[in-house]
Length: 585
Image (cartoon, rainbow, N blue to C red; front, side, top):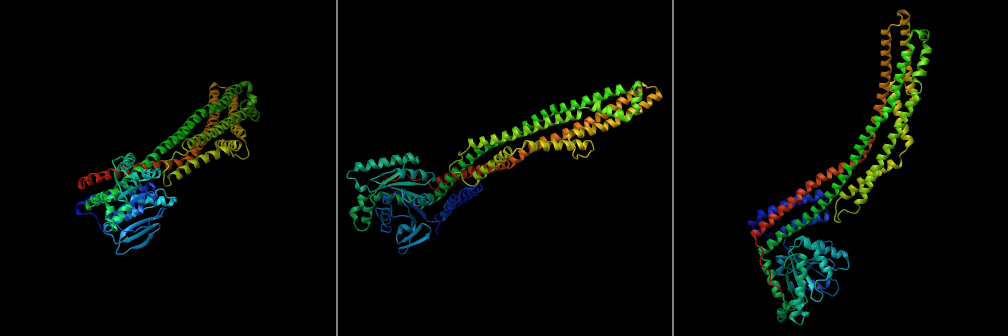
């Protein structure tokens, strides 16, 4: 392919290519559609190709007739029905030839000098009955270096033309408006009114003063085919002079360089909006995750405080047993009970009845209450997570932008639904009896370990009894020794203090071991419950953090590309100044 650039623009071209390459990387990183990535790729490739002039408009606007008039040769078929059902590219060739080079693209060659420097593209109508044909036109426009927007004088600027122009204006293309079939007007005022109508609508849509020409394609072709009298009425002279002035070497250079700039800017701005929309969505997701984490943290704090209160109830039962033990010691270590003290089995039985008493049953009841409280709190916490995530799904259902692309949306929805389903599954399958039994088993095992006893089939109360009975045996031995001392030393006060101190140590140690075992077990259960919730949320949380980081980096890349593209455009304005407005109808 011929290059249209001279040495003074080489550096500018290199800068533009680098900026567009960086943009291509950012689009791929974001997961932009393959179509948009291909559009950018084709736009860059066309920097090395001939100038591309694309003709668009409704099927009955006379596009084929206009192109035939432009090249001065009836190259394309004309008709009153949609004759163009595919993209047709006119290129220079020594003879006329038609080649289907790719799907829905027909290459036509003709020995026309204009085609030596310019490729002309005929497109399906913007009001094509078959939507696939209209899509061909929309997708091909980004490849254009210049767009001629053709409308018919008998139906100027229709609704479908207006809607189509709205879709293509953001590509940053130079658009020239041509009103065909002006020969239907009998008075100049009618032509002027239609031109003003088209110019006004075009100005509102593209935001700049448009170049508008009125022509009769049929008259122009007849003039070029041997009827020169038709030339003046055709209006083609003004249009061809405009094209000649605008599409000289420098004009083509400028438009050729502007084409990728417009495509790149359009894609960068559109996907930057997508990034910002996603970022807004993720910010709300982060707020949801923070809400869940606050709930879990408060749950842990509330459970820690509640646990202290409920453990105090268990401690109270054990402290009361300890106090009864002290009272029992004071009562038994007297000279009047010396014969009772000698009977060790009787002392132990009295200790178990008077000191241990209902302690195992009361401890078991308090532990059961603690278990019920923990199970209910765990259930409420899971249900709270379920409600939070369900509200999140309702609030943001359908709020993703229409042009959202890639796997972001599906991944995000899949993960939040996964977390929600897990929370809902836990809530729906929550078996209070099973959870309570598991906690009770853990508590029993902890107490058994503290008492150095096998858990076996013993209940918690039986294990407490086992611990207390051991203390009773120790106390019985202590009281027997005290009795012997009393017989030998007439119950010395010092011996009584010593015995009471040892007794206090035995029961206190037993109480501390029992309380520590329960505390350790239940604190572990609280941590486990919170950990399960955090683990279920973790994949979603990791996705949010990774996506936020990626979006931040991608936004920087898009903004950098936009800044570079604007610099290139400014340098292009200095190197090849924009020409003055063209001749109008």
